[in-house]
Image (tube, rainbow, N blue to C red):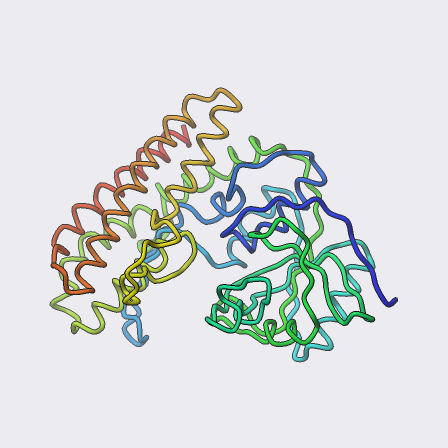
Length: 351
């Protein structure tokens, strides 16, 4: 078959690329209208981890949430009601053959991770910056025109991508997340509405955070991190300490990115650095209002406070790393407040 196109109503929702297409499929099958970053927040938020990695270039791994695509899918798929499978191919020709077969069978596949450097419709990044962490939903192809058709989280219209560009953008690896020419097939079998999905996911996340099975995740991991944070400057050299803070603040962003000030750019950041609290607060507030649930609205308020504190943490780290001032001794206290907010919020959600 030379060409095939699947008509699919697309909802643009920037900064949740690995979930946006899957949400389109869910919306198509259920008719639900979702809050921004719905699946992303439910699968990522609250998955705190603190790991010592002395043999790595980064000596400590600190994450407020889990942004690893495969782990996010693993958590939410059985709750939201879809099946998925990742396929990794050695060549572009093998991968595009599989992707076309999915289209011909009526199933739009997720492609990625992709390097945004090779996506022409992203004009600010195209041939300007390598960001090897992006996903799209393929909805069609045309062999005569030598292109695929896709929907992208940040664009309302269907986009066309030439095979030559796809070959480059797909030849992308992101350690621990994706290998070149990776395709994810999706079969949506959803039967729950968004409120049922949110309730089940939040209770599970809350139980995992409040009662973790190991000491480096959840509440235990957060407490350990806060206790050890003041000691890091003595245990590590300045270069290693600074790398930890830089990596930490990078993943506070709406997307993983270094604040402009650390790039030497004297311009406001285009993304928020709220550590995911801002996204989850919006989800809970929207659901709380729609379903008249005071607990969700109350928790949304608490998590919004968390976003404000993470923003303050970001400012402290940026000021230190740029040599403006050093108030890093305030970080343990700020993170203690964040932990209290997470505990309060999840206690409300679980009960």
